Image (cartoon, rainbow, N blue to C red; front, top):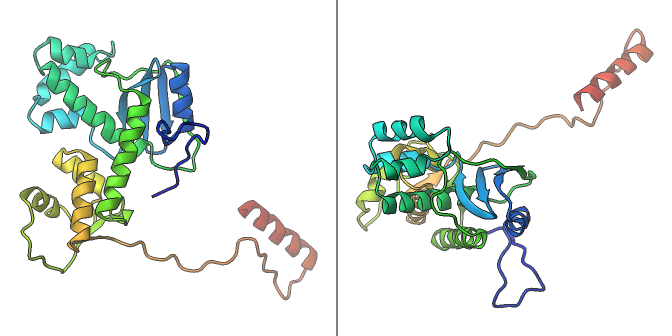
Length: 268
């Protein structure tokens, strides 16, 4: 697991790992807007996380409709009626499409799921757009500390199951190994979609399940020797772009040299 910085001046019992310094600063400012990172976006209102999205995990619409909580027609009705006003969640409850408790549970599941991926380590700077709100509207805000704590807990949990994260993002293959223990029905459905092309995110979208829960099952299957990640093929060796190869013989060596230097600089 990647190193996580912590405040050295904080008391030992209150020390909280820092997954995103910018996120903590925005929480302290009670900022409202969208924090955009490589693998997802966190939406804040008054410094609390009110929603999260990531291309790695199904959205709340998929979780609601695939699980049978909401019909597709009801979802699109809510988007049409309340999307522009950013109150889709409130409309779903007020119109009787979804019970309030069911919406909160599904929303929290989608929020924590997407935040897990959005807060993954990255070398790309995050961006924050002040004042941006999500169309789902207010459901149940979550403190930043709770989101970071749950994200860290999930990372540690996955590493305890199987420490190799390759199967989290790469295409997956079934192995030729068998197992004496029966495979649970939930994991058998997942295995049926492992074809050497689909990734964990693809399988989550197909099944309409939490991407993190898919990762849990995949790491258990990897630990049992039933699945493995498709390893990337090594790239063929290429010439050093910093080295300029000059011709041994040329009719006009000065012009040829200048052209070679120009072409190499443009390539760099």
